[in-house]
Every structure is written in C-alpha cells, then in structure tokens.
Length: 114
Figure 1 (cartoon, rainbow, N blue to C red):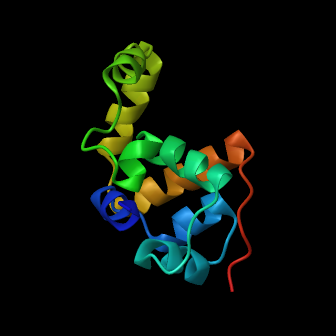
Figure 2 (spheres, one colour):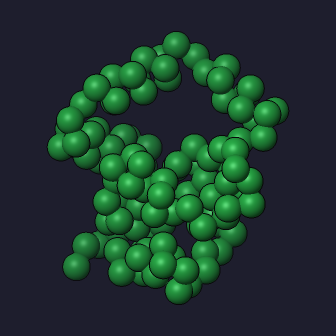
Figure 3 (spheres, rainbow, N blue to C red):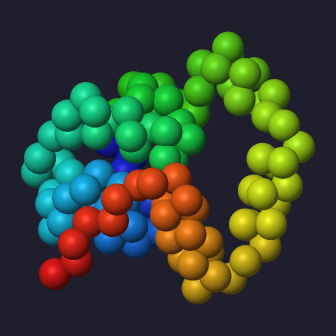
C-alpha cells in the first residue's frame, strides 16, 4: 500500500491522517506498516483525501486515476484551482492551519489526541 509514500509526499503527519480516519495515530501507523488492513470505508476516505484512486492507493495501479476519472477531475472550476495554488504556496505551519480550518468548515470530526 502507498499510504506512507502519499503522506510524506504531501508533508502530512500521521496524526492528520489518523484524524481523517477517526483513529489514533498508533492505529494509523499500523496501517502504514501493513500490520492491519483498512476497511472499505477507510479506503474510500483515504482515496478522496489523497485525491487518488483506490487501486493506486492499494498498489494495484501505477496511475493516480484511470483516464476517465482523471479527465473529470481536471475539469474543476477556477476556485478549486486557485485554492490549491494558494495552499501550495503556504509554509508547513500554515498548511496545517489551513487543513484544520477546512476540516472544521467541512464538518470533519477531529479525533481525540492522547
């Protein structure tokens, strides 16, 4: 599975991804190491979060998306493209703040950190 590769490529901590899945950081770490398997719902959440296909996430495809899905994704509106461009220009600390803000706005619960 490509979890660690995707997370590190995007400079995201394990805690951030664990929050998305509503699990502890330790539990998420076991997924990255292949000690535990993700369920269907978690795979879908991660594929959406990392903006890749489930096949890519599982290592079954070398491509982020099949061509038909990629073409649909490329047809985003200008606001999305602008938001992504702005996000990429932020330093790591501000990216974390932006992610937390979007999470709150989207109503994504934050897991309890221990």
